[in-house]
Image (cartoon, rainbow, N blue to C red; front, side):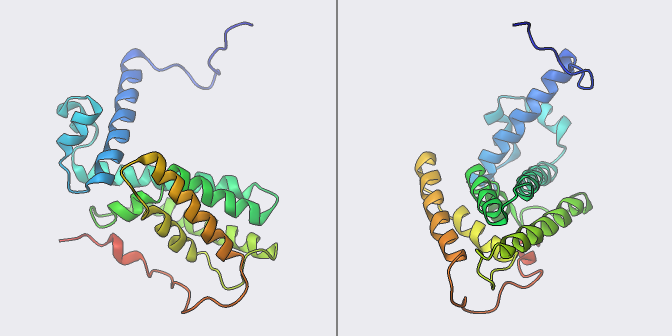
Length: 215
C-alpha cells in the first residue's frame, strides 16, 4: 500500500511551526492537569510539567489569566463539538445520553467546576457560550420528543448532572472514571423516570455567579 500523503488543503507545518504546535499542546495538557489539581498553582508549575522553558510558555501565554482563559475556551469547544455530534443522531434520547457519556469520559466539565472564578472571562468566549446553550436546548427538545426524557427535565439541569459527575474523584484516575460512569448511569435512569422533581428547575443565569472573579 502506498504511503498516505497530506491533503492538499492541509499543508505540512514547517519544522519551527510544528515544534511550536507540539509545545502548545504540551503546555495545554500540562496546564489542565496542574490547574485541575490546584487552581492556585503558579504558571511555573505548568512549564515544569510540560518540559518547556518558562520563556517559551510566556511567549505563547503572557499571563496565567490568558492560559486559564484558553483552557476553558478549549474545553467549551470540545463540549460544543460533542453536542453537535449528538445532534446528528437520529434518536434524540440516544444522542443526549451519548453526549453526556462522552463529556463525562473526557472530563470536560471539570474545567468549569474547578476554574470558574479564577479568571475573568472576556467576549472571546461569548460565541461558544451561546452555541453551548442553543445546542443544549436542542438536545433536550429532541430527547423530550422521544417521550423517554422526563417532561420536567430542562437544558439547565444538564449542568447539575455534569457537576455531580465532575465532583467525583479519587487518587486513582482509572477508578475515578469508573465511579463517574457509574454515577452517570444512575442519573440517566433518573432522567427517564416518572414523577415530579422537587423544587423549581435551575433558572437562566443561576450558575453565572461561579464565573465572578474571586478576591
